[in-house]
Structure formats: C-alpha cells, structure tokens
Length: 151
Image (cartoon, rainbow, N blue to C red; front, side, top):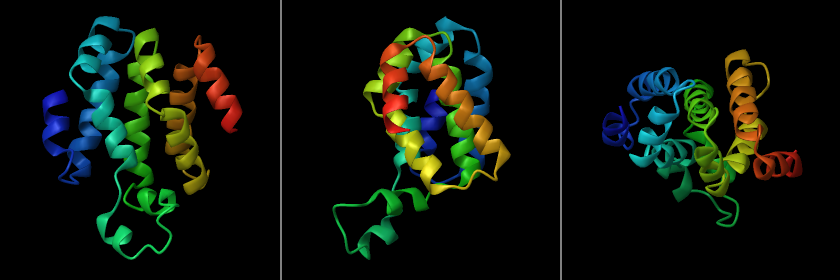
C-alpha cells in the first residue's frame, strides 16, 4: 500500500488514493506493528504531501506569494481530505511515535486549514476531522496543546 501511495502521489488519481487510505485505516486500526511499518515506509509524509499539495495552475496566477494557503487547498476535495484524514487517524491511533511525528510535521495546522476551507455540512469530512483530532490528541499533551492553540 505505501508503494502504491508513493507511485500515485503525483498523478491526482483520487480513487486510488482513497482506496489506499481506506486500506491504511483498516490495517493500522489498533495494530501498532502495522502503524510502525507504514510510518517507516514514508506513508505519513506521502499523506501530508497530498493534504498540502498545491494546484500549480492556481499558484501561477496568485498575486500574494506570502499567503498560498487558500491556493494550496483548492486542489484538495472534501472527499479526498476525508479519506486522507481517516488514514491519519488510523496511523495515530494508539501509536505515540506516529502522534509525535505527525505533530512535528504540522498536521494540526493542516487540519485547521481544512476546517477553515470547507464547510461543516459534509458529514463524512467532519467525522474524519474529529477522528484524526481525537487520535492525535489522546493521550498526547503536545498535540493537545497544538490543537487547542489553533482553535
């Protein structure tokens, strides 16, 4: 699964990314060894790259180079964000190393960007946001503080 995610990371094939995220969630759910293997394979970085991935055509026409957060989120659909966050929650669930790594790599800020970009009307995305935040925060004081500080 990590090698498939890596192969398709630049291809914008949302169906493959979605399926890989569902499988990541299912394999990592309460399975620390699998969480460790996925983390060691670079899966966390690939997922974060997908959550941050800018739409190149929008960046070319963006006037304010200091504020690209809105532009970067345009290439991310709510459905894709939903499944990427589902995988993040699975990777963080009961795995302290992954919680720490995700916090250090900026997942809490990314989640807030997603919350600010999309409406709360998408129940699937709202559930995935809650799932990811809950698994990142408990029992991790650093991530709890980060999530509280940003809202």
